Image (cartoon, rainbow, N blue to C red; front, side):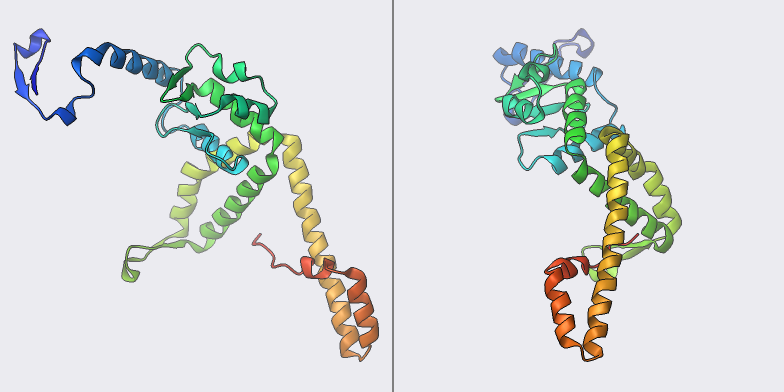
Length: 252
């Protein structure tokens, strides 16, 4: 295709290019410009690429929803892509217009695109309604960060001899810079009450495990002493509780 550069600064320059390099045929250029203007408005109203809220939003969608109805596009200013806004709104107790009525919303390839303002409404509502999986993820990542800040970690290459060790200090620095800000956002979105309930649940689980270990120790002691009947009776009375309580502890 012969392309002529129309701007005066190119002084009538022409260049032959393969058709695949052209975004659209010339008759569709106005449509392309409209599309690019819509996306430019989305970017201007959105987040910077390094804002931890963008990753946090994507995390909430992954943890709370088990479908691909909604996603946060990579480097799209935190914009949300929704295949079925009505279903998404219903699952959150919102009105569909709250997701599609924003002045910057538009539809592209049967997918509704909405700016960060709508994304934030979706993910904060989802986090408040379903804080457990979000806070479970935060707790797991915090345990991992504490461990690596003490012991460091190994990274795997494509071959076994390409493994490399990352020092604890670098792990701690990386967590503080890149991962802790996301966890802080997730906790904030879940709300202080949900955080307090989750912390109480964690402590309760620890106590339940401790009681289960005491119960199992008592059963084992009875068997060792020859009181098999008493041990079996205690085991039956507890049912599956002891086995459940004997699940391996997570690292603290």
